[in-house]
View 1 (spheres, rainbow, N blue to C red):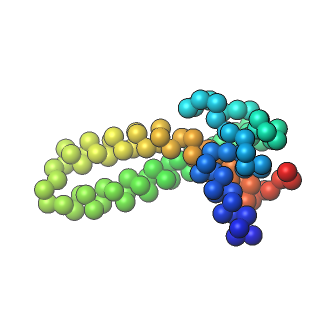
View 2: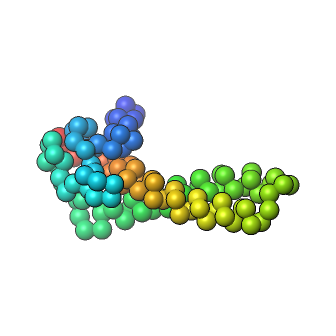
Amino acid sequence: MLHDILVLFWRGLRLVCPVCGQGKLFRHWFKMYERCPVCGFQFEREEGYFTGAVAVNLVTAELLLTAAAIPLALQPWISLFLLIVFGVVLSVLFPLLFFRHSKSFWMSIDHILHPVDE
């Protein structure tokens, strides 16, 4: 069971199909294939399927921003302006950079909870 979870998260990290582990998920930066090019698995199982990926992206961005901002805010040399600029840049940049992985990790989480046969 733990091995299967680790395999699914490894596939999510590599941006490959959670079912076969070989087909790529993305055609371009924001454009995703509808089906796996190798096994034919349909990535979006139902309408609104990737709403969970938005939640994964949001929670991850908030945790990262909090983990980075609190120690930075405690430094006596930092100004409020620099802290705000850091927060705005990180809160916009990270979700864009993490977009693909949030979808991939969401599919991995979904396959842990609702596995399908290969």
